[in-house]
Every structure is written in structure tokens, then in C-alpha cells.
Image 1: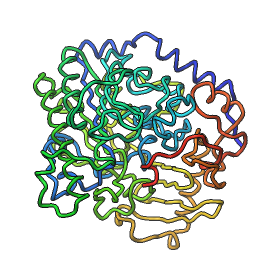
Image 2: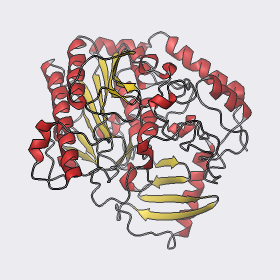
Image 3: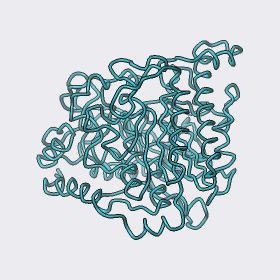
Image 4: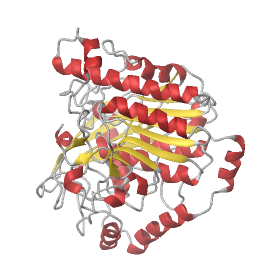
Length: 502
């Protein structure tokens, strides 16, 4: 069993502190001389693959979101790094597969984990906000955090200058003080009322206006259209013709979010910075289906390794460098957002750790040929998958009794025809590739189960060791068991949030 030396873990923690304390680079200073692009990162929650117009929706108008495809680049093989909430966000923030640092599962609710320093984005990790702040950016987050509720994980301790939102994974849209997880401004409960999605648009637009004279990074993380299904009357009235009650409420929630995004895009335009602002749009995972979302013909849903769980609407608008109306069909992943943004900002990525995302701009401009990623990987407990070219292997099962499925996504995007029996050599190669990738991943730092789960052989090759355990404990992660820890093995103190079941 490969073990991670404690000195390496300590070195990474020290490296993160030194990196953050280091002066701005020559590259950052040079970028300042010619004007840096602003960065607006919009992450939406639990939306179905075909629930916006530019991806095929017919019953919910989304003109503002659709404008990003019209004026920017739409990815038709766009992925997130996990099939559900918090791990995807950990990957977006770092540009790294979140399994590299044990962030494989959702934490429990904010109320249940607010006093637990072991459950959250590992303190050795450097966030996109850290990187852009070091490059001279004003940084702010509006919306859902879901990367730890203990004070040490607060967004304003992870590189963000401003915060308006909540710390957990789900929240009422009408009750600001919900489930022991109130809406915060900074670290204090916010005073106010109104439909939360609409308020997020207002807060985001105000952030843009406040920082119009300096480069800014705004992370706008909607909890829409995640449960609970709560819509305002104004938007519900627009969808009286939809008979299904869940779909009607969902449509109203999505429409409100589109209006809020429109307000943000208008603020960018009003400040005269539309051309030089990078706007990202990505869904955090596939639709759960039970809440009114629609993944079209894709197989599977949220929390599953099929395309319906990990393939998402994904777009970028950057008029300064990218033409509008472009459809890009090569595989990309949400891990690419951080390195692309940092490169355009003239910033620096940490050099003491692997960065799995890539700078997409040279590919999107045709300056670099080939594909951004030869292989992409996913793991959530015993479920895992790998895509290499058009071939995708899915692993499911447990206790060493795995089942493997193989699909040619170039011909069968909807995963209808399992080719595992026809192409055993491909299954063997992709299984080996997956095992090699898992050797570089860590065991989960916490379990999604409220009780000790059954053992599984899903990732027996993942490195673990006494040194890694100690370093993780000191830096904010619950230590994995000594030895060959498996993805869903170990005692857990936190209960799963409701969305983890769907």
C-alpha cells in the first residue's frame, strides 16, 4: 500500500501558507498594466440537462441564460467532477479532483456540522478566490457555500472578501433563518426578507457596481433549483399552463433565477465591462428528476455515474477573446474554470500540487490543437467512471463484486448499448486506468452515512497512511482509518443531508 509521508503533508500545508503570503508575481503585475478581465462564475443547483432553452427546453423560457450561448461558447460535452453538490464545488474552487484531498461526499447540514472542524474544504487547499485575490482582485461570493460550516471554513477565511448567503447545502427561499443555517452577511445574520433567488441577483449586481473600478471575481452560487420547491407568486403566474404541480413550481423557480442572472449581466453591461468580463455558467450536477427537472434522453440522474448525473449545461462568455455562438464538442470539465480564469488574470497556480484542470482559452481560440483532456475520471463511493476519447467505463457494486459497463459516447451518448462483453480489452484497459488514477486519490475524510457503512472494495488502492491522517486532522479533515481505507468505509459523525438520498 502506497503511503503518503507526513513530511509531504506538512510541506503542502506550509506551502499553501507561503504561497498565499508571497508577493504578486511579475506576470500579475504585467497583466495589471493592460487591464485584467473580471470573472463572474455562476453555478446553479440541481438543474436538468434540457431545462434551459439553449440545451433544448421548450416549456421554460430562459432568455438571459441562453444569451451566454448566443454570445459565448456552449460545451456539448461539458462535465462536472462529481454527480452531486459539495464535491463538485470543491473541485471548482481548486481546479483539482476533489478525491485528491478526500472531499468525496457531501458534508452534513450546517446545523449538524457547525462545531465540527473535521468536515469541510481541507485547509491545505488553495481556492480560486485565493489565487485571484493574490492577483489583485476583489473577491465575493453570493449564495450557497456548502464547503464547511465550522468557522475555519467560512468563505471569508478561504479567499473571499465578501459573503452574502448560507453555509449549508439547501435552504428555504422564503425563510431567511432556516434550519439553523441563517442567511449571513459576512459572519452575521443578514436582516431582510424577500424571495432569496431574486435577492441574490440584487446582491450580485450591487457587488459588480461597487467594484467596477477594479478587477473583481464574483462567485454567484444559486441554490436554485434545488429543493425545497418554493416559488414566488409572480413567476408561478407565468406557468399556469403547466399541469404538473412540481414542474410548474420548478419552472417558476428557474424563471426567477434567469431573471436574476439577467440583472447580473445587465450590471456588467452598465459598468462598461461586458467585453472584458469572463462569465462562466455551469450546473453542479444532473437533475434529480423527482423535483421536476428533466435530463432529456440522458441515462441516470443526480448522484449517479451515468451521463445524467455528470454531464451538465456549461458555457463561457468572454467577448474580448472568444467569438459568440460557438459550439465546442470536445470533453471539458468544471475543473477547468479555475486554471482558465487564473491564466487570464495573469495569476499563478500553486506549483506544489497537481492541478487537473487546464486553461481552455488556447483550445477555444484554435491556438492549441487536440483535446483538453485525454481522460476524465469520477468517483463517489464504490461508483466510478472514466471517459477516454469516446469510450466510457462505468463501475458499480461493492464488496469487491463490481459490475462494469462500457459505452461509446460518440455513437451512444444516452448509454443504451453496453459494449462490455464485445470489447473486453477496452474494459481491461480502462479498468487499469481507473485503478492507476485511484492510487493518487485519498480516502474520503468523512462518510455520508450516519452509521458505520459496510466495507467495499471500490478504492482499495487509494493511498492512506498514518502521516496523512495526522496532517489531515490538523488541517481540518477527519482522519481516514489507517491502512487500506475504502471510499465508503469508516465511522462517521455526520448525517447525510436530504439531497444525498436523491
